[in-house]
Image (cartoon, rainbow, N blue to C red):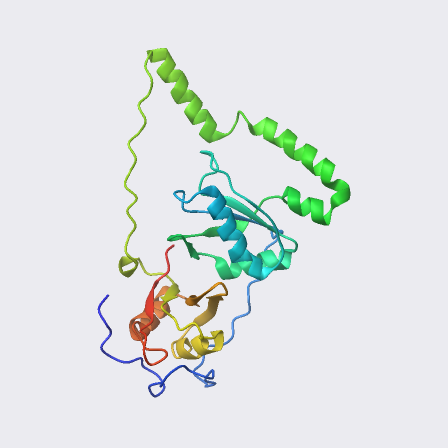
Length: 267
């Protein structure tokens, strides 16, 4: 993306890292954080993981990433066809899971932004830790549910139908050719109200980024990733406001030396 010729609009040009958050009448009103959803639980369901990375590496990476938010009881990831690119991360408390979901949502793990939501039910590890007396009942119910859905899973039905059709024709179905995995460059991503910041100084703080981006209207939230200090997410109330801030601050030298890269986050 071409450098932005004009310096950021707002207060006088800043030298080095901002050390305080400006308090002005023009600053956006504080927005109350969203309430915890009714389906919040201790286990997170993660999708869109990079399927080319080995399962044990994914497990280890997820545990190291999420352990900063609280005790991680278990990380479940499988390499089978139905569960590829997915994982479950279980915490010892709902609060830890909620903070992790909020801060790590869309974090690009191995070049793919994770899609994170709360799991539908508690995991075995959570029940064993927090409700040990009912663990056997929980496990029995889960096993019964798995048996009931074993033959009604849509994906399995699809492959079973294909296999039966090929057997009836007397031929083996040829595997479908793989599509090349082409990822759109960051510079050409469609507008998004969330900005993705890269090449930040490792000493940068949340207050410094709030101070920088609060020059522009409708700032909602700044999220830093504890385990990767050179990146961050900045969320605005709408795409237009995010675009104004991106155009103004892309390639801005936050520490007087290194230019920060700002793109729209991947949806």
